[in-house]
Length: 259
Image 1 (tube, rainbow, N blue to C red):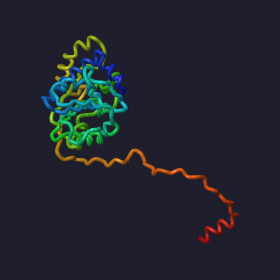
Image 2 (cartoon, helix red, strand yellow):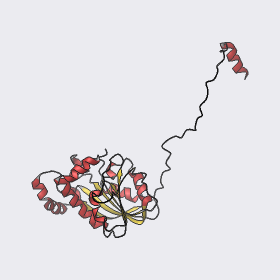
Image 3 (cartoon, rainbow, N blue to C red):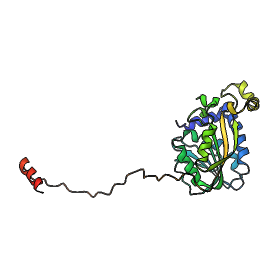
Image 4 (cartoon, rainbow, N blue to C red):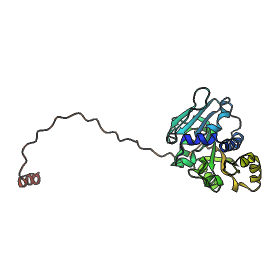
């Protein structure tokens, strides 16, 4: 199921959405490091986590899936958003240095084809940061937030997907230990839940965050895509043909047999 962009915007405007964005963004910032002069691509609904790149990066693009819909971002200045098919991104090969994918993998129909497309548009040694719902986490079990929709991942599943498509995982992080509820007492104790949750291990985390590096040679070649539309040859208009009298059945059958 693909989320609607309006539902995503409404969630991140809510108190729980603001807290969850702050907690996940801290991990994204740590993994991204210095983005000075880099070409940055955000895929899915990554705009809540891209603002730190606007002033330092050479170029920032926010690609949003066509089925999800798009919204102008940022509010000030020209928009950086592009509505496109994630499996056929309008970029040349080796075009970007850093990819940040949020609300992307769990909603894509073909995750393997998305990884091939990432490998194509990523420059040599480019970094890929992925945020996905944790399969056994509380957030994946509750459908009142965007992290409860789509296909959640376990760490082995995500690691296998990355390695099978020539992206080497380098750093793993966990986030969102607080319960996904809109209660003020829980939201005020968000930092407490994050610190306490880490003491019990990652099993209570809501999302997985991983940074991977692109290898120089693809592990899996891209599929040869067929054209979406069958192109028919042009047909010139033709006048109506004059039909003569029909032959008797026996004579018609005899003529065919003689040929």
